Image 1 (cartoon, rainbow, N blue to C red):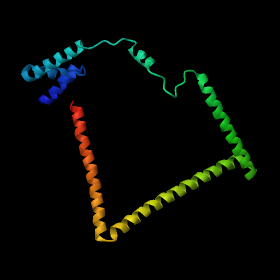
Image 2 (tube, rainbow, N blue to C red):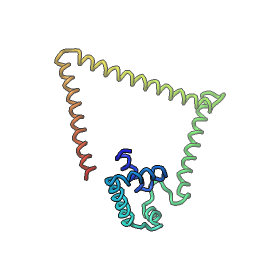
Image 3 (cartoon, rainbow, N blue to C red):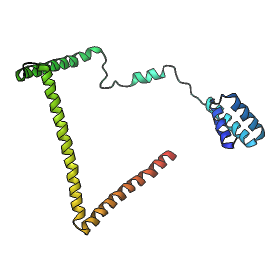
Image 4 (cartoon, helix red, strand yellow):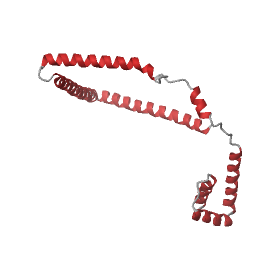
Length: 189
């Protein structure tokens, strides 16, 4: 056993998490022959006793008192009756929308108005998705063509584009470097 493993076991024992009889026996045998680890164990047990004696008892109703003192969230209702008006409006608007869709679908295709309306909505969403995907692809292709034209037109524009990329990388690096020591100081305090 190394001293690092023994130190880990001592910490586990002081936390009350070392319950294996074999490990406890090995720990006791090692502590009998190593004064440094025995001193570390005594210090750990003293620290645990000091922490246990400094523990402040918490009232049994502390959690419920804190939760009762918090203001109600905006979406919480004090009683179920407050949800009656929004639910009635939702049902009214949903019913009106279903009636309008059904009536208009009956005018377009008298055979199956509701199914035809949902199929038309599905076709609408599919066409919108297809058009959006095409627009996105064309936009990226256009950006690629513009960058290629900018970079390939002359050596000066290629150098300027390289300088822009290096400048952006430097700016991101500086921002990341500036925030890292602030976190280290915050953790160290």
